[in-house]
Length: 107
Image (cartoon, rainbow, N blue to C red; front, side, top):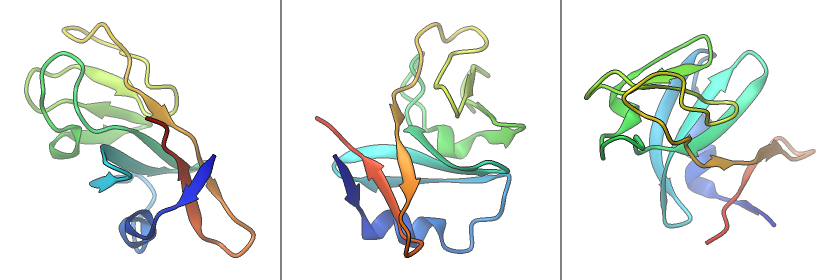
């Protein structure tokens, strides 16, 4: 079930393409990234070590961990480089007809 989350709306407001922002939504620490093809939401915590990906970098849809350099695809959550081997959780995101953002947060 998709849930409108005001905090996601606030985070997305003014977020340029190619940028990201870490936030807490629905009890989860998530990373909101805006790419050419829209918004993407993944867990904000690196699966290798508990570092915030929001403190890292985003380039061409790939987020880099500031602690040890692991990289992840923000569209799929796939771990792309070591030392991370496990993917990030991906949260489906959609834009409603009125332009609001909703993400699916389960569990």
